[in-house]
Length: 518
Image 1 (cartoon, rainbow, N blue to C red):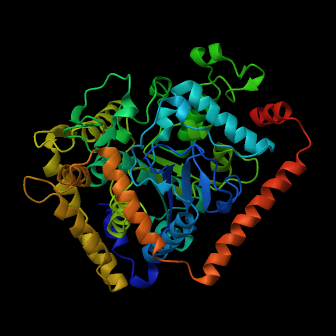
Image 2 (image 1 turned 45 degrees about the vertical axis):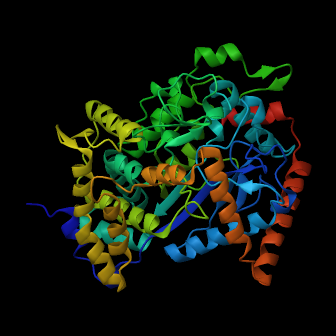
Image 3 (image 1 turned 90 degrees about the horizontal axis):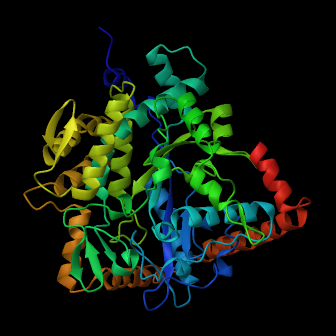
């Protein structure tokens, strides 16, 4: 009988284990002193949103995105993220960095300014892509914020793992196959992350103005899901009808890139009716189901760093999967930086076990069940009577969660033994603690409890938390050298944007035509 993957992993010695490589991309809105989405341009002190390596914008001019470099330990990564937050908070003047995933007060699409990236062809392409999202889905959905966690394992591990597996493929192909092995199990278990980390059970009434919904009234300005974990990932959040029919296949690299490429080159009648230009201005890149790969919303993505002008699919096909991007994380409103240490360490443990567990291909019928489990936990995860379909049978969500946490204990003990620490045991214990007793202290429940005890609705409670975080971070001034480093990055990014704008020789229509042909 062949050895299990867990058994093979346990054959490694501490000297064989080089840990994880990790990074975070954290979004958050700038808001004014009244808790309304900022109408001001991206602060110049933060540099160019087009070229800055750590501070950019996502959909909106008001939606900051802070990016860490890659680190090999959680502490250093979180310290870097905190440093960037400290610099940002210094340069927000009287504005506030919103602490929650669901947005502040807004006033329809017109109140959400689309991000600007200057006059270079690359900058204009990013802007037109966002214009396309606006005409396709509306801007309101794009005002939601989250955190993305990027994880990879070093090549030193992959070579040892490939030897234990007796695999003779190229290292590139082997890594891609193994990352998709991990992704398949992630899709089977991602509901657990929504239960443990979903932090958006409520929203400001302005977000659903004129929209039919089934939320309950919290107060005159706030709606909430009575048993919801993450409104961000539910029907009011990231979703659209055109993508519902895509059937992107996550079983292996070639099926993933092939089905995604098909969506980018398949015309969608409703988008064709809009056209690509209005009054002489581009309003979308093309009229296909997806304008570009990034338009596809999913809880996880296989990723590869792209070169200049290279598309994500091209990079994946040419050089294989480099890392995994976990995209379903709500911001932690209780943390000044939106994520916390126990969460990151648990994700490492969770993702490693996804790699080490058996992971057969996902057939269509299982795919539907997995989607249903995920949606159910997002919408009703705190309902004790909720059951999930697992292994062909229904199982209470609480029992299923405890079972998944228990299976991680031996792996946590192994890693902690190698590292001579209690890192993973503590992270696992923190998640178990959330599911103790009948009143689970999962983040979504904590948010509603904190709002209730404060007597504040969503906007005012999040504003209070955001101001507390701002005060905390502003009370930690950057060291002189680090301050100078951030200032230099901002100046350099502004210079790089100007250089790009000066170097462009072709018109934007010519640039776009060439981009679409590549």
